[in-house]
Length: 194
Image (cartoon, rainbow, N blue to C red; front, side, top):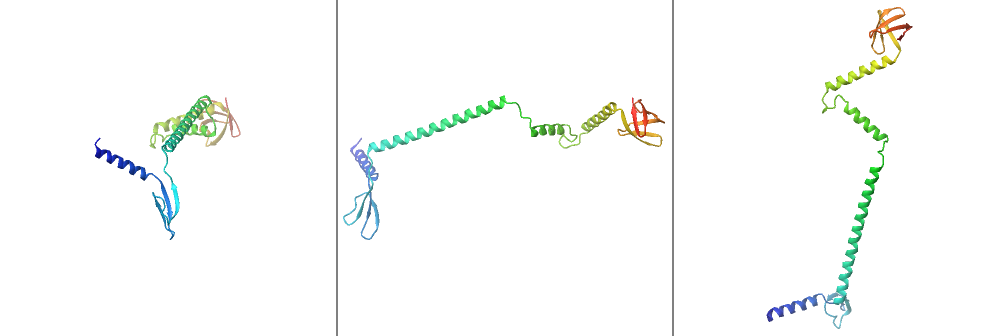
């Protein structure tokens, strides 16, 4: 290092030391406030408000800041661990608990089943195949109900009788024959079939 570089380094070091040094608050006789790095003049009142800190004080302040940051990071890490443990606990509880079968869940299942069987379920276009399947299901349900039932209400006009399910009856008097071949006896407007 040359003498010129050494002189510049010393001058800059001194300037930095002076810049970070003491601060004085001074008030003159007219009440004007001034802040300076020099002590107040003889005609001014006031004093030093910020003194230059020692290296030990600066080092202690840095150490305190480091320790505070370390504590802050430790708290964050502990909080993250607690959140992770809570998430794991919730997942374990969900796996061990039986599924909830409340009203809303049942309704959602019923709605899904209804939508799946809808005749307009393929992109809101009419589904003729689904319509035919549903009509066949309705006819089969009607046949099952008729087969289980022994008693039918009749409506007769012009010698032909029909029941509430659309089955027709032929014959006269107290004995009628249903379209599926069953023999029925009639009492008033009720047919009893074997």
